Image (cartoon, rainbow, N blue to C red):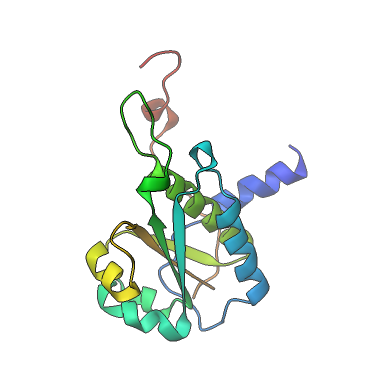
Length: 176
């Protein structure tokens, strides 16, 4: 296997949801690369129907009441990922709006980049979007998709087997 491919797959084996963070701050150059990953992510018809609010350590405390896990309070960075459905591509056949799909792609690519940077991240969906909207001053036409906690893990990122369904249960060839 090509060394670049090997590195890519090793990255995905190391990636896991991190819920406890060290006190180490994220370097500005690393943060810049993560934000660039968000900006460059794929989106349907290149509509880019997203907005991201960066909440740094000094301001993370304003979100403490909405976290269901105390470890998130130690994250030096929270990114609020938001969708703007009015700007998204809509599939004509069924009217499905792809704003959330596009935001999810951007988040996923950024989380992979965070892992490559030796940072940990966790998608936080167990939130009350109305509270997040109020705290962060998000306009009514913007939807809160998730919060992403990012920082140096309190424990090292290690390769571990994940509990995933076998391919036979999820892959269909040709037809269902």
